[in-house]
Structure formats: C-alpha cells, structure tokens
Image 1 (cartoon, rainbow, N blue to C red):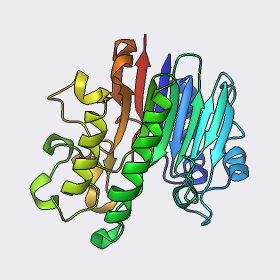
Image 2: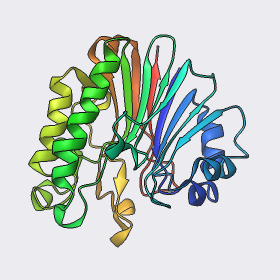
Image 3: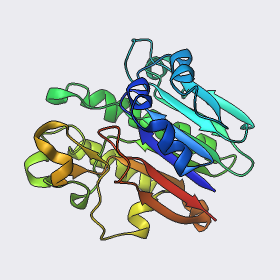
Image 4: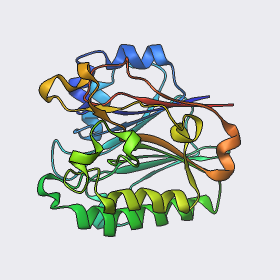
Length: 254
C-alpha cells in the first residue's frame, strides 16, 4: 500500500502543470494534498481528469487560502473535516480518513508568518490542539499523519540552520519543541527513523534558484503511531516530482 502527501501550492495551478499525470504515475492508494487554495467544488473540478479516486476536500473560509484534500482509491469507513475546534477549522487545515486498521490524517500546519506574528497561535494553540486530536484518535486505532508540518526539526533538515534559527518561520525553538512534543507523545518521524543521516529536503524557496542549488528545508512528513512502525516498509521524499515549491513525500506500507 502506498500513501502520498503533497503540498501543491494551489491545486488549480498544479493541475495545469503535471499534477494529474504525476498522480497517475505514482499510483498511490491514498493521497493527501495541502494548500489547495480552493473550495471543495474547485478541487473536484481541478482533478476532474484524475481517474479512480474518491475526492474529499476541506477549504478555509478565506478564499484562495490554505485548504486540504484526501484522494482515496477505496472509499474510507468515515471522513472527518477538521479537528472539531471552530477557531482552527475555519482555515481548512486537516482531514481524517478512517480505514480498517488505521486513521490517515493529512494536515497543513499554520505557518508562523513573516515577523513570526502567528508563532504563538501555531505553537501554543494549534500544536497542542492537533496533538490532542491525534492522541484521541489513537485510542481507537493507529494513526498515520502526513502533510506540510511547517517545521524543520533538526539541523540536518535545512540547508542553513544557523542563519535561520529563531528568525525564520519553521525553525524557531518553539516550533522545534512542538515537533519534539509530538515525537515524545509516541509519533515516529518515519523518514528520519529509516534514514538518520540522509540530507533530503521537500521545500525550496522560489527565490534565487534555491531548488536547482538544493537550498531547501524538510517540512513535509509522514509520522506514524509507534506501534504502527512495523507496517512501514519505506518512507521517501520524491525530489524529482515538480509542479510546486514542495515535492511529495510517500509512505510504503507492508
């Protein structure tokens, strides 16, 4: 079984590039999309040529902002939009699909924004509420959570750690601590567990030819409940897939 996560930076723009062909070629069983920047109707319209998937989309109240979607070959047992807290759910940041033996959650974690103006909201409110939501799910069955988690957890996860530390959204101590809290609560960073010393990124700025120079950050993750790790065969970062400022990440299950 193959699971995918991809921040498409606008599903309509991505569909106008190679998104449909890429998804057909990757042929994953479940796909999570982040930053769709579209209403559910617009997501379905943009993906009209994608064959073989049930499509579930959750949008922000603000138009052209945030948004998540799940594409699933098999119809899930249930699908839940949001995490059940209105102040978080009005930005369309999470969808959960329930399957026989696990929950699949895809999320677009709030960016702390320029000047770190949303840092407190992201770390003190979102991170805490989202982890509580995941732990509640985990009481029923294991959880696979994926998406743009908007944090580089360790120095190895970004090209220039020193110049960005506590200055740039995604690499402040508060955000790092939020990810550590998630790991200490029993979620495994699958890529880093399997590849402890591998330098690979999933996001590059559009400025300054960052992608061609590989000046990037690893912001996109597949995390799993610790007890589910024995089902994980591989965790991959698909650098060769274009069409966004992020690349997709993939989890292969046994």
